[in-house]
Image 1 (cartoon, rainbow, N blue to C red):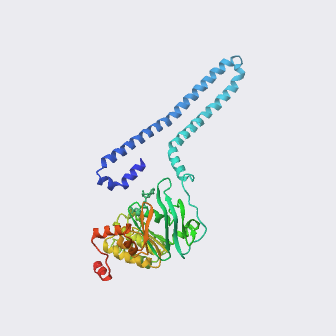
Image 2: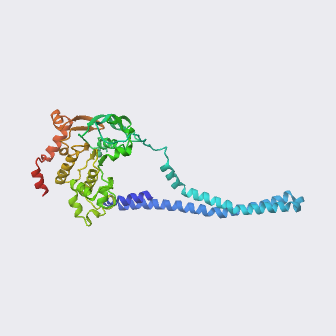
Length: 399
Ligand SMILES: Nc1ncnc2c1ncn2[C@@H]1O[C@H](COP(=O)(O)OP(=O)(O)OP(=O)(O)O)[C@@H](O)[C@H]1O
Ligand SMILES: [Mg+2]
């Protein structure tokens, strides 16, 4: 019931948008009725324990007295002292027994919660990541994906199949491909959100699993597909990855992510609380804050999963410039649906159903005339737009 109520509150917009209030209310009412029923039964049984055990106790006492009288009729005078002591002890024990019974019913009542906690704490039913010893300091040569295969824990279906890729230091690899092709999954494997099923990811010839996880993630800046902001100030959200950052650095990062302008217009500027998950901001604003967060970390390896997808064209171009600047001397894995944003990448890998079907530069892939060029054709014929070239045009748009 609690799950359903929480889900309904957080999904209230979807419920209202689909005019499903009545159905949801009915479902919740049904769950409440079931809970009420269960509570009633549990209360009833636990209240019955005391009278029943008392009744049974008294009946057994009387029975013992009668049986004793029948069996020891001839010696009743000498035996009565022992019997009396025995009965007294029994009488004193009875309340303790009913207390034990009450405890048992309390146990039963809480057992479902206990089951949940035990399941949560159990180490057997979930994968645990081992941590390596090697401290990661900086990328020296390259990142390699070697014959990588991956299925989500508990699922049969392989989401990544035999992927071989290499990202030399300081270059950008762009992943493109249809929805569900496995791009985000591949990007999630690099910071070890999951461990690969077979094959391996090597950084400078050392398997990812041999690195100390924390030192590795410290050097990565990640802007993921669904941005997450904490219910805190804009400043705290930007500085989340580097709480020691100075005010100046936070402002610079915000400016580079094209977020400064809108943040200072918020009611309390950088001190404005952005609400649960950042509800008080627009999708593009949230995205810019999370880009600023990644920029502030000054990462060695940058992972951008659809980082600019929610921005308008002008903001996207401006943020793209900042990202281009930033990724110039950094190793970057970028995922984009809009091909205009990744044309300058050193390598573009096209993914289809978990496989990398093509790798090359923009020009190479276009001249090949296969997957990428088809994607490109579709987008640019569909949009009938050409990428902006010069800064003048950009500045004029920004004004
Ligand atoms: N947590 C998960 N558990 C199980 N399967 C998952 C999980 N996340 C994704 N998948 C499956 O993995 C496949 C690849 O998903 P992924 O998110 O990597 O796609 P994508 O290429 O990033 O797509 P998009 O462009 O829509 O973001 C999908 O078929 C999806 O069903
Ligand atoms: Mg994705």
